[in-house]
Figure 1 (cartoon, rainbow, N blue to C red):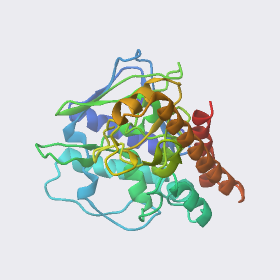
Figure 2: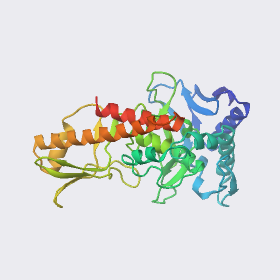
Figure 3: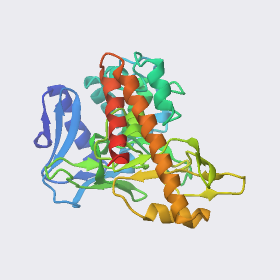
Figure 4: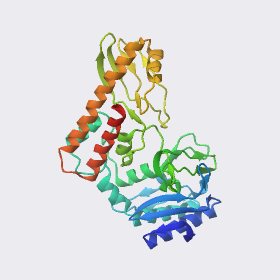
Length: 348
């Protein structure tokens, strides 16, 4: 299995090789010519597989149900306190392998230091500025372990249970995000991923999905998504001449993260939009979607969108200005660059 590994840490290499062996034991496989790269605790995947060719096949027996494990509270290392008796041999061994891998890579202390949701030095005015666009930002406590599983797990319904649960899917979780990456597919018995090379290199990527823009990705995942092609509007009220009060909500996704169609309500004496998404590529489709759902005249719809655009530009500039008032740190830089990415879409 070492032919698949390129690591600057021998223990990380051993843990990755053992993960590959256990995936194979469960009936899974990776494409020939695939390499798992480890550099200073950061993991990525490269493969010679052709674009859209099969890359991973990971059977359900190799998944780890992380929320059914009792964890220690520390933010320095993952600590397992107890494991359910019903975990199978492969799931149990995979759990211990992945815990050892992420501990060896120093993931918890790295997240605690760099993740905007976790970093202790984020000033209150920066937090408030971000909340104007992403209201949930730092509203609930999150541990470094929670952030790790938020980054690494997939929400899937298994075993005839209609509810989704967080599942660590080994090897797949090592793929970095790109908006043009593979989406992956759940077959009912295995998770499969095709090889996608957005940068025309051998590195493979996964699209983490859920229609998040760069600022939301920074808040949730802790990195800047420079590949994003959308900017979601902040929830906001504003007045448009000849239209009146317009309210934009933040109801663009359902509980499972599925993107929802635009809903416009004019029954309450104001025009309410369920959400709004600005696209990198200008299109009259957005104006038509608004007129078709609201009864607004085309000129009125254009005014609504442009005033909304200016309001969002101002909120993003507020985030950047707030971040710039302080000595640069990695989490502040992440928020500043994410706001700038959204701003670039709005001002293209």
